[in-house]
Length: 112
Length: 113
Image (cartoon, rainbow over all chains, first blue to last red; front, side, top):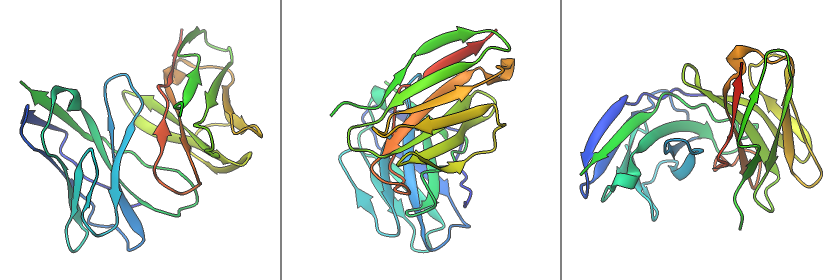
């Protein structure tokens, strides 16, 4: 699986947009970008995924660069409850199974 | 729909004992995968089952095993427990194998003394 690089931590003011970057320069053509988050003491939560087009759902937006070597997860109006570790993962949609490789993630701290 | 349910939520064992953890996936989900989370190693894939067949296995010793039943419920077993097995064990379910969109349970926190 391709590896991802994320900053270990970020701060964001409550109500502002949180932009979380991820580098995946070795991503291959059939690999998707997935984002999960893990709030303290809970299981990871799926946020969004995409292949090459930008994606948006009720939780976040995913912006993938044209060369697909990096992406940004955007939380448009961060709240204190968005404080969590955010994981960026690349994986083929139809890989041999649901074997996701989690890296260190970015610890996002939303401050009042 | 009910989410992924894991039992027990917390348990304490001593070295050398064995433990069985249970996972009930979301109704209709046929894929169940297991992950171990420790402060040092982070989230690591253990194994995945789909329609009662193990499809993938992570890099863990044979003391770690699992199975899936016909109703998609899954169990994982760790035998001859070691101190290093203390971890949060997470179960995730998905509608299909290879979808990438996993729904995780709250986890079973195992402490080995």
